[in-house]
Amino acid sequence: MNFQQILLVLKREYVTRLRSRGFIIATILIPLGMIAFVGAGIGIAVWDTGSEHTIGIVDQTNSLYPRLEELAGERYKDFSATTEDSLRHMVASEQLDGYILLTEAHVTLQEDPEYVSSGAGGISLQSRIRSDLRQVIRDERISRASVSEEVQQIFEADISLSTTKLTEQGEATEDDTGFLTIVGLVMGIIIFGSVLGYGGMLTRSVIEEKTNRIIEVITSSVRPIELLLGKMGGVGALALSQLVFWLASFFALAAAAGPLAGMMLGPEMVPGGEAAAGNFNPDSFAMPDIAPSLILYFLLFFILGYLLYSSLFAAIGSAVDSETDTQQFMFPVMIPVMIGYFIMFRAMENPDSTLAVAGSLVPFCTPIVMITRIAITDVPFWQIWLSILLMIATFALTMWLSAKIYSVGILSYGQSAGFKELWKWVRE
Image (cartoon, rainbow, N blue to C red; front, side):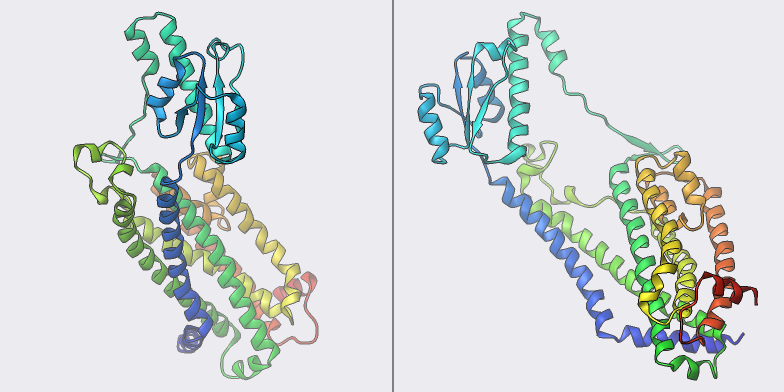
């Protein structure tokens, strides 16, 4: 095997595709799309903060409206002196978003309050109104029950959960499980999409060269195995370059998006009451840190996953004469990818479950599932390296099979091979 020939094929494949207009456009558009997505999210949040609804309250109890006014005075207005017909007219003419008639029967839970509206606000507004009414009616019932103030405080206490994560050295650190769960899910989806996307690119490349008979000229000076490795390496280097550029763009965007979001949303949106204390800091919106080891594992599993599946995709391209004929071979390859994709969501919920651990050790599912587990929890070191060794061993096997098929398939014309022919090529 001549490694110089492999490098020549790799360089040709890499440079040719790197200079293509489609690659350049896709590489630039993805970060721009990320910026547009984040900007749209911030803009929607800012826009939504100014959208208020007015709900008319007819309070026959003389006790519920004051509680609603204290709870959300900007939303509820007292219309106790207005007739119900007038309120209906105001709702129909969109002067009010809706109204509620509150009576003693609602305090004693003999009836449910009725919200009459024009449909404005949708289910989100209805949910907020339902929550507000539940709270004020509960507080009124407690007040009328003549229980002690201490009991009222106990009942009204809002219990939150503060989480802390201990490192292997026993040091307490901030628990970013929620954020890291999203990171793990995104990383798994990126590997899932990249395996299919770049694998499909390799398949189309082999089919194009085979259809145009260019492959006959190339194989006159390069052995099939050298050509296969060179093409896999070229497309893989291209994928890695594109991925590194996207990661750099993501971190640059994340570093700027946090403070920018804080400044756009304003101090009143900062949790914890910092604005009231005059300590508003836009950096409080900054993204939590991502461990460098997680990025390295992500790149490692991305490379291993690409190599494992690209060898199969290249073999598929060599076995057919047109892209439409690839369907019969794509289905068996897609099954383990999809299984890994679905296990990833279970691993997101419970990264230490038996299904998640088993899925992360199955080579064809490892790249998608294992990176999700690593992002969320402390995966035992032996599991990580066992999965890597299993992937390398599986890649050696798939590479051997693919090389057998590729060496025969690239010079076979006229009819796409079936599974019987592929088995014959492997045996020979």
